[in-house]
Amino acid sequence: MTIGSPEAQAVLTRGIVQMLRNAGITVPAELANEVKLINSLQILRDKRQTKKQNTLDSLLSISASDFESGLEKAYEVWTEESPESEFEGKVNTVLNQRIVGALYSAHGRILGDITDKMNQVVTDFQLNEVQLPSSLLGDFNYMRASRAEVEAISAFRDAAPVLDSLWRPYKAVATPLGHDLAGIEYSSALDLVFMLSDVDNFYDAQVLAQGFNTLRMNMDSMKHIQGLGLWGVIHLSGHRIEIRSIAEAQFRRGEIQNAPAPQPVATHRAAGFMLA
Image 1 (spheres, rainbow, N blue to C red):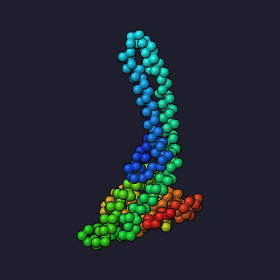
Image 2: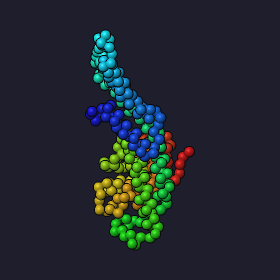
Image 3: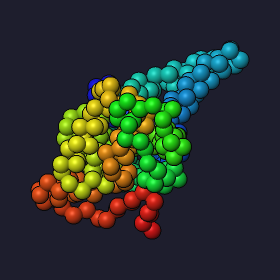
Image 4: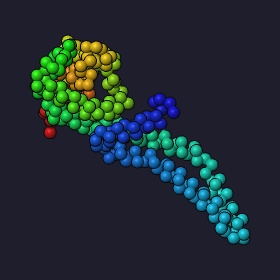
């Protein structure tokens, strides 16, 4: 099984579906049905194997006079499926193409659902209302923190794993479709900036992208906010956490960089504000 082959893509897609279910994301019916079809070939194999075994078992109980005809029947059953490996290979290819196609067709709804859930988490934990102490980026001391600062840190620590649990399947769905959301390359980090924050100028976007990379590299300056993830970096950079669609993020980046891009359908979902 080679990387990028239909089989590998199908295995990846099945893993993505399970990840979505684990995160509480509704899997579109057409995609869920395609996943179920993966078992159809195994069911067919089991039926064939049962039929073949039954012909052998019958040879133990039939009369001597019927044995010759029973043996002939068993021979026919066991030899009539010689091309089955070729057939199964072709069916597997069809099933793999179907499930990958179903994911591609449903990805917009899936990502939209995850985006809404992430923004709702931001709202529920009031991440854009609390204020993290800026000293988290330096010599932070809990003993000197105010009650409001401690509560803000607690809110982010509670929210971060919830957001991460949704962000992982988001990336898992988007990556096979050609979107690099790993944030390793500088351009990828910039894409994340426009997807996850309300940054409105390119200088701030560059600063925030650098902050993402600094966090990823476990730099000492980020030791106090490792548990707060990207969300803490956004907040401490002076921006709101606002998760947008990939299309809108790409448009905003192009607009801010003065590089025209096609206007996407409005899908902005600001934290604390949901479009009907």
